[in-house]
Amino acid sequence: MSKRVINFNPGPAALPLPVLEEIQEELLNYKGCGMSVLEISHRSDTFTSIIEDAEKRLRRLMGLNDDYTVLFLQGGASFQFAMIPMNLMHGDQVADYINTGTWSTKAIKEAQIQGKNVNVVASSEDKNFSYIPKDINFTRDAVYVHITSNNTIKGTQWAEFPDTGGVPIVSDMSSDILSRKIPVEKFGLIYAGAQKNLGPAGVTVVIIRKDLLELCADDLPTMLKYKTFAEKKSLFNTPPCFAIYVVQLVLKWLEETVGGVEKVEEINRQKAKILYDLIDSSDFYRGTAEPDSRSMMNVTFRLPTPELEAQFIEEAAANGLAGLKGHRSVGGCRASIYNATSLSAVQTLVDFMDSFAKKHR
Ligand SMILES: *Cc1c(COP(=O)(O)O)cnc(C)c1O
Image 1 (cartoon, rainbow, N blue to C red):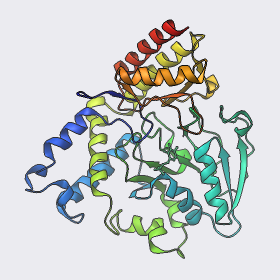
Image 2 (tube, helix red, strand yellow):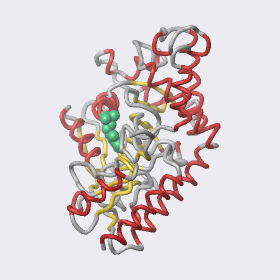
Image 3 (cartoon, protein in one colour):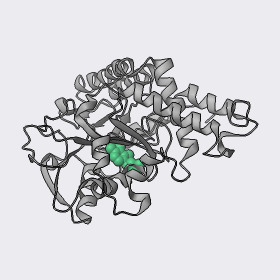
């Protein structure tokens, strides 16, 4: 492969090209400090300004006020499945969980392993997780309601967030953070592994409302407590410095080059629309998610036969369109079109899909 391809990988996923170029440019000597950003202390002024700038930009982009604490942690979103109930649920307190796919199922399991009082108030498992449940009866005194805002594998997304009667929502936003404007005030905790929409693998962003942070458990190992990282501004021990640096660059790109979340949301809506329009107008492709539950980030679809799907993925790759295979647990095809994927990249995919269908119908 002599040139870069269009990358539809689900995660780790495409990064903005200007960000990769900036990393390349300053990798050997970061802003004249004579060392690589890979080689400097996490306690240095240079790194302090990187992590502080990343936090400021994230706060501006998401509209976070001082009620929220921002943490840069390790362990991926999967680690949060365990850390959230460990910190937030005490004694026989109840938390509501909504099961919308693979990642929600794992989150539920991690709370149950700890013997926590988990109430699965809704699930779309009956239809292979092809929709987002509606009309849910929440537990009035639950400590939180856990949802997965975008289901990366099943290709569904919460278009609107549920009215929980004031119970804070805890959301896994790994695959749609900063892809659209959200009503932050509904959320008690937001978490996201960076490798889809924020940067590279290795750092997990956790945004926690301070009143919930205050209620977090104290009788836990130091490294498992949110309070440890909140008190030390994510620098209790060595953080994933390089990943945080790349996140800072991605946030700068989103703010300064793209023009912010409202702008990227507009582009994301157009991207998803042209793909779904093609799928809907075709008798060759079939979307797997119910239309009112479709994801703007992960577009899942089938072709008439598994053989054609294999051929589609192979021919697409030969044409410089990579990463279109569905998750190994569901098969089919999936185009992951996160913030870093441009409208013209998606148009190229749409054109390829159109001509593939005409050839093989
Ligand atoms: C990718 C993904 C995860 C897993 O993230 P890790 O960082 O690998 O633990 C969890 N939840 C969602 C919604 C994801 O898309």
